[in-house]
Image (cartoon, rainbow, N blue to C red; front, side):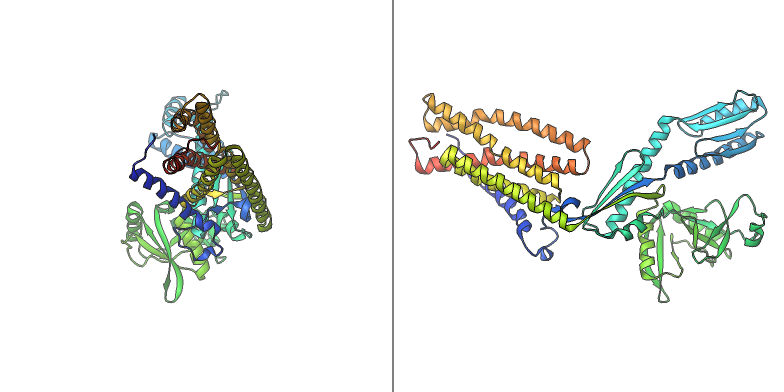
Length: 516
């Protein structure tokens, strides 16, 4: 006879009680008073309504920046080699330069190939000495993949800072990002937040050139005109002295009662900031955000603490928004909203209602079938079916799974599959009794022999769920998660809990006839 130690019995009971306990928040009416660690399943966009944004990553801007950086590297390489050149220029696809001396040209081409991985260096066949430098297709594809990954990461950080619960942020294709915001019916503030690149840098103001002179063309190639947030203009040095990528934190604080943004650098940025402020005391330092000067204060003294403040005509909200952008990091490329879709809360409520009705109909049908087909044993299975559903919901609540409409479909499917194992076991028990075994031996053989078949059949389903989760996205992953959790819980309840109940019934009543 199959026997369980008291310790294992207590573990099984504890697992069932834990599942029921964590499933309780899903039936509580007022969920706002529940502690954070005891929350119901999060509902997806299609169940509670919300907004969906499809964003286009402006890859052309990225490639222009990339080729501009490559142009600077080519210029430095040529100067280092003391090679004369003409017409150095860049587009979003390539950098071109004319080198008349063929000996110097061959040497320069070898050096250009070393500037970065994946570079293709070619020369026009017309003999004019025009050299073209560009990235191969593999390098461009890798760059775009990295840009998408960075964009997804930064968009997710910005959305998380807003407190949106369980947003879905994922890449789509080679240049798009999908953002789904459950519960957000008006995404205007989110669109504004995501529309800002938040690329911050610090530039020295060119004190030798006035804005008027610059507009007349009397400006150094190393300087440029930038607009300020208040409508004024500045002439600043093109090359930043400190990059915003070195920022580690940004918070709102108050200076003389006015909101300001205090920021802190990492070790490298703090060292660069201290060096710049030490060497340029009395000069102005422009703080540039997305090619706009938001502040250009005078450097009063060296700032060696690795931190500083950004002043301006901020309101508390605008200062908070700026601090949030700086904390989450700069987007590698601007984002453009291609498609905006809003799912009403009413449609979500209808989906939940229909899903619940479908689940109840399937649940009741299975309960009746099991009682009619297997009598007392069928009733035991029905009890385990309730436990299976409770444990499944408890696990999903505990790990913070987001439930979508396909997820409800997964739950309905696992309700039907939950009794498969018991049907295999009971049919095997019937066969063993018909072969002349005693009830006790038939039950032992039925559970033992059917177990291998149960594991094999459920293992194949688990593999399918893993494949759906790995290769799928959004709702497909939601279906895969609920399917996988449902398979695991049904195996536990169908084999372990059912057998515990059958053995307890056998020990108490010692039947002489099989109730099947």
